[in-house]
Image (cartoon, rainbow, N blue to C red):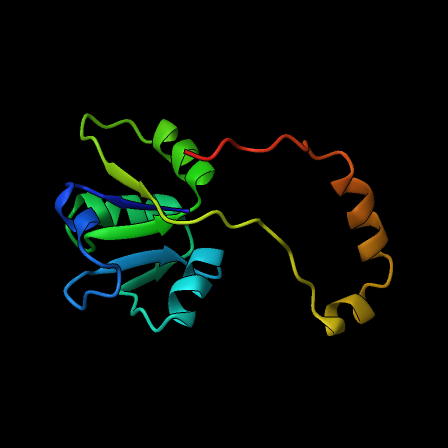
Length: 127
């Protein structure tokens, strides 16, 4: 995960600084990580692209996101403005299904596991 800011100054402040207006993607590992540490979030939105726009317009001054997702989002969002990033932590991705969902869809988990076998297994190099 990386912290992303429009300017370098917020990256030098501790993430628990109450003056920071931090945004994160709803339901993401980053949101859970921040909230589990009592770090308040100014904005929680469904899409990373929304956070980037909020950052660019000054509604938040920092966001926390998966590094690969951030890189992909920025490739799709042309801008001359450079964003500053700082590595925070490595967080393996996972998926969870509720017992109710599995009970209602008994064939889902086996089908899901068969599809996961086709996913690339290459790892990302940590920066």
